[in-house]
Length: 454
Length: 66
Image (cartoon, rainbow over all chains, first blue to last red; front, side, top):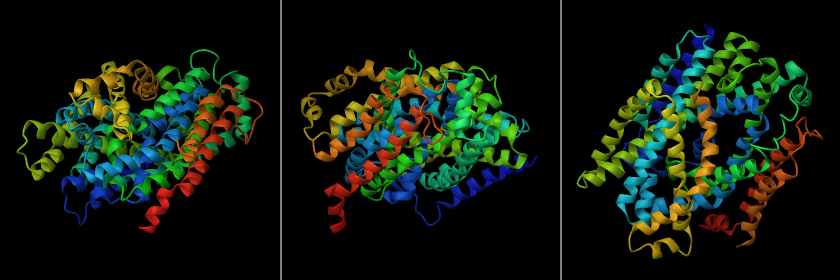
């Protein structure tokens, strides 16, 4: 019961914070979607670096450590390398976006390639990719809340309540709401993960090395990469391709527009890798769970972190873990909803009806938030594995944008010049690289896919 | 290719190339199996590398002046 109360406190606090974020601002689309391009280092840090800590990092990273062992280490590496790229990539994207007053990722491609149709296509692909991603967040939210409330809140109620809260503050506050709840989420998750990752190995094994030795003894070769399958070459290629695709998600891409200036990104490139190290403690919790709560097979491995928590800690702490878990779903969920709504209103609807005013587009985007939330709820309750295949396709599709982005930023502009005759050439440019990229994204998307089976 | 770009390439070598040589449990460092320690070390080195790049990059000085 205490756990239940604490989870509700977290929900109420995030809702309040999300609603308050709007205060004193006139919400036009630029303010609503990209925060009027006024976010400093800390907000951008929380929006971009904090994005890696979704429900599926929480459940999935510990689940991979528990179920697969060493291959989980890849999650630690790819984002860190993506931050190296971000030092040069994001300032260039941001500069262009500011110059042309861009709001969505699709806008970027509209402007660079002078093709509104390409923009609409990118928008649709983005939304098709984002809805399943959101569904996965919601399912994770349901699992976290129902397990940590000891089954007192059924998963589907948790999902409905979470979605309503999310929808309300996104509709009203836009990205300001996401940024403020991100502050709360990151403080909560940081505390929870550090406590779990340090306390569990010491409590059960006496120390980190003792824990790894015990795991190594019970399951030889588990804490190093296997010689076949998820081997060293799998590791290397997956990390590289995931790092390249990291910023291609529409919500991550356009969250970067919210920065005040380019230096925000350069400075963040120094700190964001260190923030990754928190994942290390998620792994520790997962490895500890191997011997403490053994026997979770297949998709159930994703429950390992929650199971070891309920087995070890008093009810009030379980409530805090549940509340932090709830926030990990709300923040990325809010960005996904807002970005999808913006893309549909600005890049698809406006293309069909060019006479729409800015004000109408803003209104429409805000109304699309609850509509998209309903669609996601429908898929959450009725979708099965088909969602998974949608996600895989979406992920593969989204990453096709990387070559186009790189080409558009290159000093020589080889694609724009060569492709002036029409966009068939441009599409071809993306397609040539398809098999390679597709392969990489699929193995990466697996990290999101697995927990959904729980 | 400017020198700072090369500097940015080093972490890629350390992680993507290094992994082939460090896939082992022993020696334990800071309580972690060697492979995990190696990767953690590189994450920290990435941060350090980016700090050096930040200091060297003339782009950051221009904005200071502006």
